[in-house]
Image 1 (tube, rainbow, N blue to C red):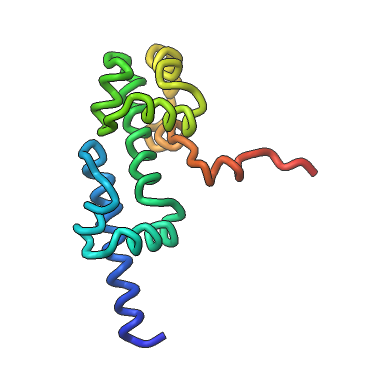
Image 2: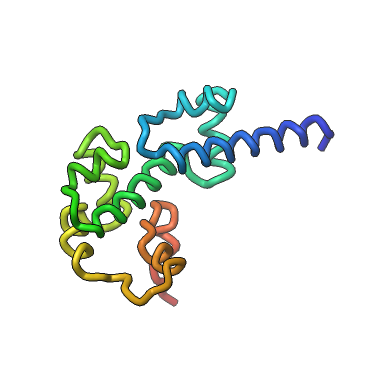
Amino acid sequence: MSESSEADRLRDLARLRRVRDRIDRDYAEPLNVEALARGAHMSAGHLSREFRRVYGESPYSYLMTRRIERAMALLRRGDLTVTDVCFAVGCSSLGTFSTRFTELVGVPPSVYRERESGAESTAGIPACLAKQVTRPVRNREAASRSPRLA
């Protein structure tokens, strides 16, 4: 690999990291791939392809996973309605939010809120492990978690 192509690859990786950091920081803002690509000085197509290659999912999927993770924390508190949580995490459609939440978590947000808000399901678990236990399963991870029959 030539020095210039290696430098280009490292520059793209740094840009992708900045995009991921922006999604982590600004998940509640109205973000789209075009705006993220402009901020990284890349085309939307190139950003999507490279982000998927490096992180294993599209920028939109990563953004929605972050939003659902935050929504899970807000729903566990129990003091906000599902609609309030939907808008607090940056989703503009309650239907899309509920569908994506159900896909990732396995139950609708209203059921999750009822089940988790008073249950103290992570009581006694160190915070570093509680975060891992409550993290939603992404589509690509769901297949690997199914039991293997031998």
